[in-house]
Each structure stands twice: as structure tokens, then as C-alpha cells.
Image (cartoon, rainbow, N blue to C red; front, side, top):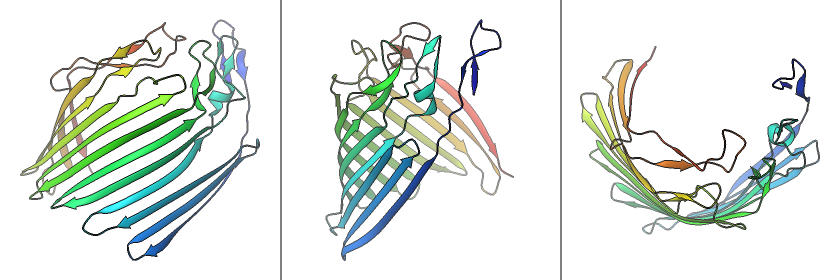
Length: 291
């Protein structure tokens, strides 16, 4: 494909034709280790014609203890090959691609517990992961490269409850710690909380109220942080029985909270910046017609 340069007439400053093929094979099996225990084992092999190879094993053990709930232990590995853009996109005016870039690789271990409590469900999960050779642009040169390894660990709790088949509550909390060799990475909150309350109001009317909280996060340059924020969203929907249409009204950021999100450490577009302000109160009216 060809990409024209500004002020260079019709001659492309990038004219590249790259071909690639990939071979994949995957196998998985489930083995009963007992009346209440199941082992799941999987293995995937990927090979590109340029010579790169990846083995991705996965293992999972699920045990039903009965009255004490279900216990899970999971291991997984995965990878992401660099895109054509990340490998080859370089022009005289903009150096970005890196043909020597390596694939990202990740390994994770997760332990979980799930239990029914009346008409509700309680879930607790502990996880640990390591991400190697993360693909990201260099903050100084702008050229894509493999970043230092990233490790993370955390705890997640989730609760779900239903009443009379008309009302439902879902709530979740996450505590996480993400680190790299260069310190704490950007845009990684330590605390996150979400809750959603839904109700069937009858006669085709439904409502949902959602709240979410995200703690402060570092910006791309690592020297500043954006503050924590809490949002509330309200959704109303009218879906008459036996009809092929419905109408929904969404009120997002209901209390008009002011907050910003970090942006990547990239000074090549529109000058340096560390964060971008997000939308305030937003109203959205949608309708759907089936036929």
C-alpha cells in the first residue's frame, strides 16, 4: 500500500507490499479427576512464515465442594504479534515502525471461589500476571519498541442478588497493584468499584441505576496524576409487550462530575499533553425497530 507525503506531489513516501501467513493448531481436553473435580488442559501452537513460533498452554482445575462452594485454579498463557503498522510504518516525516519488534507474551495464574447465597451469588478472585515485551511507542523518539516487563496482582469481589424476579443488584470491587521495571505504569487505578441496580417497573418499563468509582491514576509522563472520580448513570427503557420497538433514555454522568483520563506519552501529535477532560452530563435518546 502507498501513503502520500504532504507537499511531495503524488509520489508516495511509503510504498510497501508485505505478505504474511500463519499456521495455528489448538487442542483441548476435559478430564474427570473425581465426581466433583474436572481438569481442563489445552495447548495452542502458532507459527508465522517469518520463523516466529509460540506455544500457549492452558490448565484449569474446578472442584465443587458442595456446601462450601466451587473452587477454581487457572493458568493461562497468550501472545500478541506486532501489527503491520507497528512493524513497518515509517516515512521520512514520521518514524514509527520497528521491523525488529518482538511479540508480547503474557502468563497468568488465577484462583477463584464462587458460592450461592440464597438467591444471590458471591465470587472472590485472586490473580497474578506477567506481561513481557509490551509493545508501545517510545516517549522520546516515537518509534515503537518492547517495553520492560509488567507484573500485576489483585483481588476482585463480586456480589449478585435478585428479588422477586423484578429487581437485581450487581456490585464489584477490585484492588490491584501493577508494577514495571520502570515503576508504576500510567492509567492503572488501584481501586475500582461498580454497582448496578435494575428494576422491572411493570407495563413495559425498565430502569437501571449505575455507579462507578475509579481511584487516581498516573499520567503518561509519570510525573503527574489525575484525580479519582465517581460517576452515576441512569437508564430508562420502555418496551411494550408484543411490539417490535422500544425506546430508551440514558442519562450519563448524572451529577455532572468533572474528571479527566490520562493519555499516552506521545508528543508527536498536537503537542505535549498528559490528560484529556471527559464529557460532563450527557443525555441520549435511542429507539429500536425490529422487522
